Length: 81
View (spheres, one colour):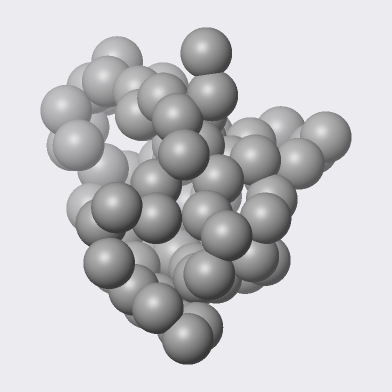
């Protein structure tokens, strides 16, 4: 993810996600909490949690996303306006 980029807030009915930062800094919103993650740090996004991701840093953000749940289709993304 490029510097300054942000993904829209979203949630999922059927999947959870685990994000691991490989490079850069991530600003994560997970439910009511917003926090920073750096290289080798991670967070768990439970099913149904409203979440978003952005790169507040100057270098590209790289994360690994592990999805788990009974259904992992892309049509399970509910964008929050």
